[in-house]
Length: 397
Image (cartoon, rainbow, N blue to C red; front, side):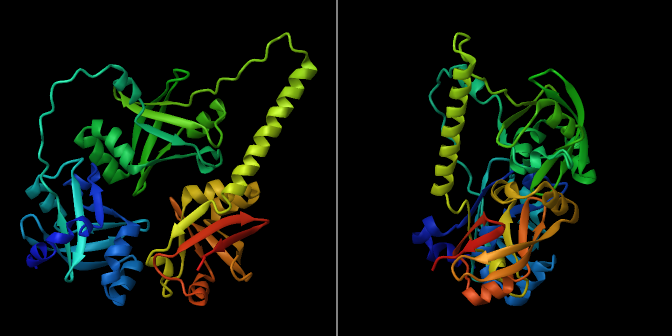
């Protein structure tokens, strides 16, 4: 098996299709597992497994695989587990972390070859750069390492929570915590923390809850939404300092109209600005006729377990945004809702279901029939939009 390293030496640039920078949770030996993104695993690993093994994974089970460390030649029997929007590699991962001295920021490279998962974490050769004077402005520029544009679900006061990307939280917040605090978060899945609104100086006792590939900030979030008047499209900035989570949503500066302009003229100017903004929005919508685009993965075209996975933010920004409040509330409470879907390419209509899966949504119902009817395959692009009460999709040939 180690022979493969020499045989494919000339193909080194294309030899490692999966690459990942290790995060805090990846090198946590108290709960050892390596998290891998869903699409690369399905594109470059699952295609080599048997249909039975793929069925086991889709049923929330796990499959045993051989894994070889290409840096040392050691071979391990490990397990691959499906976690919805990502996969975990478990088994001997804790031993690998300790023996290789893995740490946050190192890059792991993964491939599949000859019935075995190969991985490598090359040792980084550090070169000492010449002494330079770094301007103080650089530090100020990175004052807020976590930034997020608020979505529809972020400002929903009926179910108030703020989802934050896992890697950002682990790289810029959890890295400042003690091992005991991180262990408490991992075991109980939530931890109390102090959060300070930098804009007002107010301090809140909130909770950080772990949800797999992201974290939720809950507690007083609904109160913060209402008091700050948060809306879709505003940017929240977050950092950790002095044992406290700091956040800021800067107020947009309004350009004052000179007092010498008559009131009627002011109204005309505002109306003209509104018309220009509306026209710009129409042009943007026409330019981006298909706001949701996705390359189909192995699980998207599996007729044994037919469902189409769509990213949560895209659905909320480009589909749920057009729904009535009652429909959004039903989806939030029941986690699924019936939708009318239309195939733009054929004109066929289907009654389907949209299911909420946390950080993503699944389109189910007639998806298996659509896969077979259109002959969908891995690598094809599906385009989705909302139009006149229909979820419209297209897969151009």
